[in-house]
Amino acid sequence: MEIRRYSSYQLTRAYFKKTLGFIYLIAFFSTAMQFRGLIGEHGLLPIHLFLKQIHFWDSPSLFWFNASDMFVGSVVWVGVALSIFVISGLSERLGNVVSASAWTLLWLFYLSVVNVGQTFYSFGWETMTLEAGFLAIFLGSEEVQPATSVVWFLRWVLFRLMFGAGLIKMRGDACWRDLTCMFYHYETQPIPNPLSWHFHHLPHGYLKFQTLYTHFIELVIPWFYFVPGPLGWIAGILTIVFQGCLILSGNLSWLNYLTIVIAISCFDDVFLSKITRVKLPVTKAPTLFRKRILMLFVGVVLCLSIRPALNLFSAHQMMNASFEPLHLVNTYGAFGSVTKNRDEIILEGTDDHVITKQTVWKEYEFKAKPGDIHRQPPIVAPYHRRLDWLMWFAAMSDWRYHPWLINLINKLLRNDAEILKQMDKNPFPNHPPYAIRAVLYHYRFTTPEEKDKTGDWWVRKAARLYLPPLSLDNDSFREALHQMEWD
Figure 1 (tube, rainbow, N blue to C red):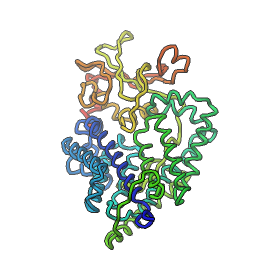
Figure 2: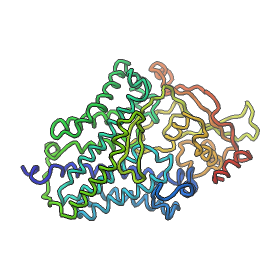
Figure 3: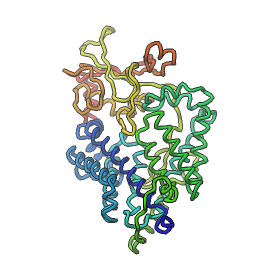
Figure 4: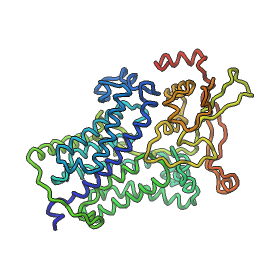
């Protein structure tokens, strides 16, 4: 009776906020470890060069006022500290003003990063983090009754994510309709983990069942998120279990973890109190001012939801898109198409000033993406190796669609310290190479028999030259760098 008297979502709010704080912590920490090499003053896609090409309202960010590495780093590390602050629960115990301020700063700081992060921050979980973080601002501290409207909007986020993913699959690759997509997914996903090899070799009948079950979870279950009580709880549980399986089978950054966090909104205190046995504190009714703020908030979110809702049922459905620069209400989706073959770009360097058939090429190794066929695929999620992900995308198309790749080679030709931090193996530790080339290889998982015999995880075969040998003595290469202001 006590639970129903005070609030039906106090525990929901508490667990959602603590776990969302963990997501923010991962997001800010991974940025702190990578931003200098990727978007810093001397990175692959420097912030200050990007800002020269756009207007403020195209990508609002604090870094319009100062894009130095020192300032960006300060903002990001404060984001790390704030994340720990909200995880501790202190932000909620100190009242509404402190709570709302902490969550607003987290949202503002990460928005500032995403809006200048360019292709390195173009993933769906970036905007989903911002949308969930914006909603968290209005949930209130533990002293006040949780805003039920925010909980329903979190379910709306979850619905758009899951149902959008289901629709994009049915409208996309034919393998989703003939139930064969899972024959390829585990092998060709961006960054496989050690279990991906085992999932790939499951019987085809079971993999077809997995595909069918994916359609059930993404197209049927989301409609029950909005049903109070046991049906909503079951929908939340099935979604969390599904996301847990995805976590086991690959490295999809913090996408699956964040989906689990948002799925907490499917549970009320009646359900959560049975599991945790936590006594609920007494809460106050919202003040008139808070009620008016929440009314305005509801109106804004409803208006901004119109285009994402229409997008869901559009024949030209967009995947992982925002309709305004603050990323408040977005559209989501994943793996509308599944690549059937895995191609990898392997960067190779040499000391030879004259390239011949006898030239010895030494390979660079990335921290997460496949390279060395003997190396076990890593576990990196929920941490996000952004450069490794972009290398996966680059292998699918011509290098001209990925100009940052040219600057990556430029940095490696100079043994740039920040870029080398993003690499696992530098074959030229004492001096830079004279030239670097990029070779495209076809990769596939070894069969069980091949793995038993060799111990290798991958089999690969050279396909073609992706980029010819480039050196700093090459006039056209230097000119291209200069035109892009990277020289």
